[in-house]
Length: 283
Image (cartoon, rainbow, N blue to C red):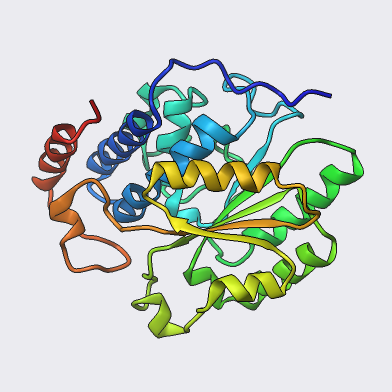
């Protein structure tokens, strides 16, 4: 059985897709005057490669049974995933203006019951990988060729449930499961490695039976190579891509700001951030 084709979308480069995802996120942040924008800008390259290179899905049929599942464990990153789903055509662009408002399908923390393309309700951190293990097991039992991707954060590595799920995935040899860790080294209480040092990550996941890659999460070429290997490797093991990202990537004056979990952006700075981003639009 041939693998399902990628969705038929306008032929734009991955760099252009990542730029547009960042722009969508900034526009949503401007609507509410807040949002986890530093994380959204940092993870945009990963989402561009996921949605415009790796995943099989149908934009106008988000519950298509043959789709790959993309699970957002980090519920507060919803602004980033909405930005990607808008760019992918799963959500209409005009809903961007409703972000975080009453009766919006785009709540500030991701909820599967509200938003097409949002596979799980995130927010209580540390659960996404466990849910992904269950989904991957279920798909295997149905003899599905679909993959389960799950994006989780370095802060979630403090949770024992993540490592229990990692052990289960290795034990069941879930080669249809692809984990993605956003390592931006920042969580609510401070730098992640200072709160509870999770390094060295590569040998830890290898010891749990995973195929492990670690890449610059803002390098599109490296991400494409990593996503391709994760999907097409012939080993019977779960796969994980550890992505080192830079918070607020693409807007230098925000990148240089003192790093914290919830980056403060002043009301007049949203328009400035969009202008700066536009100046760096890919050719």
